[in-house]
Amino acid sequence: MHKIVIKGGVPLKGEVRISGAKNAVLPLLFATLLSDGQSEICNVPALRDIDTAVALLNTLGATTERVGDCCQVNASAIQSIEAPYDLVRTMRASVLVLGPLLARCGHARVSLPGGCAIGARPIDQHLKGFEALGAKITLDHGYVEAHAERLRGAHIIFDMPTVGGTENLLMATALAEGESIIENAAREPEIVQLAEALISMGAKIEGAGTARIQIEGVSSLNPLKISVMPDRIEAGTFMIASAMTGGDILVRGAQQRDQEALLQKMAEAGVMIHPERDGLRVVGPEKLMPVDIRTSTFPGFPTDMQAQFMAMMAIADGTSRVSENVFENRFMHVCELQRLGADISIDGHSAQIHGVKQLLGAPVMATDLRASACLILAGLAADNTTEVSRIYHLDRGYERIEEKLAGLGACIERVLE
Image 1 (cartoon, one colour):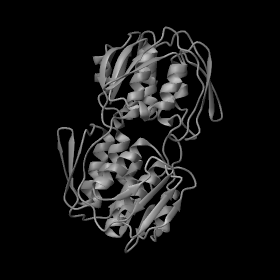
Image 2 (cartoon, one colour; image 1 turned 180 degrees about the vertical axis):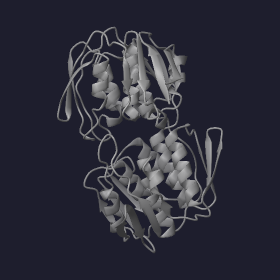
Image 3 (tube, rainbow, N blue to C red; image 1 turned 180 degrees about the horizontal axis):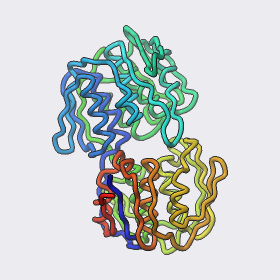
Image 4 (tube, one colour; image 1 turned 60 degrees about the vertical axis):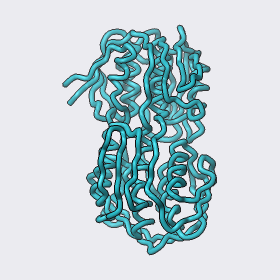
C-alpha cells in the first residue's frame, strides 16, 4: 500500500500537460463493441478504471492491445454478453456495455452496480430508456437481463439529466431501427465527444450538447478512430493547485469552453486566468476571496470539482458556502480537511467554510477519487508535512499526479506505507 507525502508551502510554477479524460475514454472504449474490425483510441491515460474497462472488453471476447497512449480494440468476435459482478463492482461505468451489447447482440446480462461511497447512482433511467426502445428487462439475482431482437426508435424523456443514461441510450439508438429522440439529455462535453465518435463510425446524430438529441438508427457502424479530449476535471484540479499555492501555471490542454462555471467562480475568488494558445495560464492571488458554489449538471458547477474547490475556500479570507446538489454523501472529505485545521461545518447538503490563515500538515485518509485530490491540494498549501493514505482511489482518475506536481516544484512523493 502506498501513500502520498507532501511538504507544503511551495508556490507551483511551470507547465503541465493534461491527460486524456477518463470520463470520455470509458464510453468510447465500450462504443467499440458496436462494430466489427479494429478500432483505435489515442490519448488514453494510464488509469485503473481504464484497465478495468479493457479487462471487461476482454471478458466479452474483444481483443485489445495498448501501443503507447493508444488502445486498439477488435470486437469482431463477441463471445459473451455478460458483464460480471467482480468487474462492475470496481467501476460503475461498466454498466455502459449494456447499450452496445443489446444493440449489436440482442441480449445483454450486466451486473447491477450497486451503491458507491459518494451516494446512490441508480440506473433506472437507463432501463426506462431501453424498455421504450422495445427491450424486455428483467432483474435476476443482482443482474439486469435485457432482450430485444432489434431495438426500435422511440421518444425517450429522462426524469432528470443522467450522463451514463444518455451515453448508454446514445450507443443503443445508433443501431436501432428508425428515429429516436432523447429529451432532458445530459449535456457534458464527454457526451459531445461520444456523439462525434459515433458519427465518425457512421451514426446519424444531431443535438449532442443540448437537452434534445435526435438519432436516426443505421444498420451497421464502422470501427472507431479518435483521440480523447483533455480531462477537464484534472485541468481544474491543477488550476486550483496554482491558486492555492500562489503559483503561476500554464495548464496545457485546458479548454475554456468546458470550464466556464469553474473559471467564473475562480475569478470571483481573485484568481487570474489568461487564455493561451494551448491552454490556460492560472496565477494565484495574494489573498483568496470567499465564494459560494452550488453543484449541478453541466453547464453548472461540476460535482467532481466540489471537493477541490472546498479545499481552496478553506484558506480564503472570509466565509463561503458549498451546496452539493448531485450526490447525497459527497462531504466525506470534510472530516479530513478538519484534521488539517480547516473550519468547516455541515448542514444537510450544504457546508459552511470559514477560511483560516494556514492549514497545518497531518496524516489524512482519502475516501474517494475527488476527495483524494482535495487532500493533496490542501497538503500543497499546508504548513509542514501532510500524508495522504488510501491513494488507490487517486489512481482511478489521475495519471501520475505526484510526478506532474513535482515537475511544477511541489515537494511531493509516493512512498510505501
